[in-house]
Amino acid sequence: MTNFFLGLIAGCIIAGVVTISAARNPSVQTRLGLMPAAQAAAPPPAPAPRIEPPHCPEARAETPVGRPDMLFSRSRLWSIKP
Image (cartoon, rainbow, N blue to C red; front, side):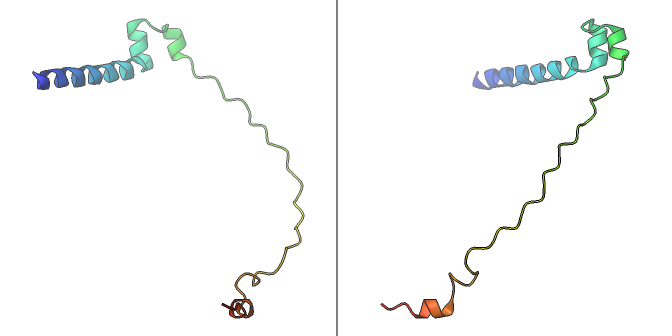
């Protein structure tokens, strides 16, 4: 009995997905009368031209803070006393 209900639910889900997929196809929509044939045959509208964003000025190089060897300096590590 449980297998029957699980199969019934799975079959309903599959049938729903297939129906929705088919109904999104323009030729199927025309045959079902959901969309007029003239609208289905018309090409899609052309996309709007892309507007280039304004270019930002070059960022100035910031002065570095400290030196790269400050954290892992050997003299600093060996100078730590217990």
